[in-house]
Length: 278
Image (tube, rainbow, N blue to C red; front, side, top):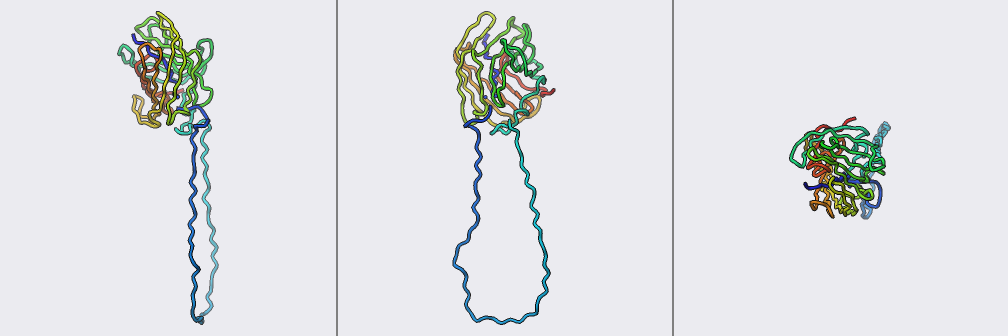
C-alpha cells in the first residue's frame, strides 16, 4: 500500500507568521495642489463716476461643520496581505467539527474532528488537529504542531490509522519544521529535513524536501458546509519517500479553518461538512 506523508502541512497555516522584511508596505501618493501662473491683469481708461444710494447689508455668519474622523485599528494578529485575523481563523481550544473523508481503499466516511491546544506527543505538549479515531481498526489521523506566534506554525509530526490495517502509522521530523505564512505571497518556500517513519512492519529515517507556494490569495470554493472565500496553498513533498512525490493542496478560510484538503495525512481527501463550534 502506498504510504502517504502525514503533513499537517501545517501548515500553511505556510500563508504567514509575523513581521519581517517581507511585510507588505503601503505607499500613499501625494496629490499636488492646483497652481495658476500668468501676468497680472491691467485695465486703462478714464475713471467712471457713479452715484448710487447706500445699500443696506445684513451680515450672515456661516459655520462650517467638520465631519468626524473615524480610524479603524486592525488587530495586531491580522495577516498583512490576506487581511484576516489569526483568532478569526483558528478554532478555539476543544472546538469540534465534522469532515467527509475519502479513504485510500475508496470509502467515503464522515468523521468527527477536534482541535486541542495541549496534547501529549513524543514526550512533549503540542497542539493537535484530529480527524476520526487514531486507533487500530479505525479511520483516523492527527497532526501535532505549535504556534510560536500568529501565522507561524511548527510541525512536530502526524499519525494515522485505517480500518483495514492493524498498525498506527507515525511520521515526524527529526527537528520540528517551521512554516512561515507571512512569507508566502509571491514566492515559493523550500525546506529540507529528515523524518522518522514507523509503518508497522518497519521503521526508517528518510530525507524530506518540501516546496510550498500560494495558488490563490482568495478563491471561492464550495464544500458540504457551504461556500467559502479561501486561501489556496499547494505543496510538493519529495525525497526518500515511499511512492515518490506527493502533491498536497489545501483551502483555508476564516471560521472554517481547513475547508478542503487533498492528500492529507491518512486520507485521499477531507472536506468540511459541519463547521467548527465550541
